[in-house]
Image (tube, rainbow, N blue to C red; front, top):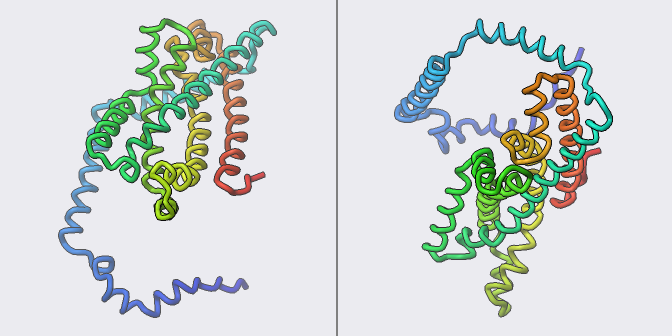
Length: 293
């Protein structure tokens, strides 16, 4: 016979003071009619939007079941994974290294460019309303364009190849990092910079020695995470001609070389897993925690 687990002290205290909690927070225990109506309207709107999407997007369970059977055949044709020859394997390996290089250059170059823009977009660093507004709106405009669209634009501008992929990831991540950096700077504790100012330090000293040490580990963690994510994105933009292994993947799918396709997917998965392990340990090191084994 098992003994019941002991209840948490906070739960016991809340249960003992239930009447007091109901008096202090009546809106939690007895929500108003307006709040109930608002919640009901939101849930109804979401349900209607979901149903509308099913109708407009031509959702059909029969098609899904039939497609799953075809998917099984497709997976069967992909076994066993094979590149055919060693020369093909080394060609794919070179393309995979190119994909990682595209992700690395696009991510870290975007981070370096976004760093000063992030300070311009932070209210606690640049109180000027005009500069803050313009920097935020420019960043939002750039961030609103997907990396695949940037890839199509840069392929048209500079031609096919990895250079277009680097520029596409740079543009897409520049807007993203600028927003993330400015929000991290605004959330930083101002006591350090105020203490530096009280000892006679300039505003620049407050930023350099008060804010920057707080936000740099956060910046590093975010950049490492998006480097891992951009390795997958570099594969996708390669399909439209922006270099890397994505171009080979699209070509092998087009000529129905499914064993080559599975080998390429396996190479991508192994590479992303390795990058994930390395970046996870580096992120934990940056934020001051011990990495998981």
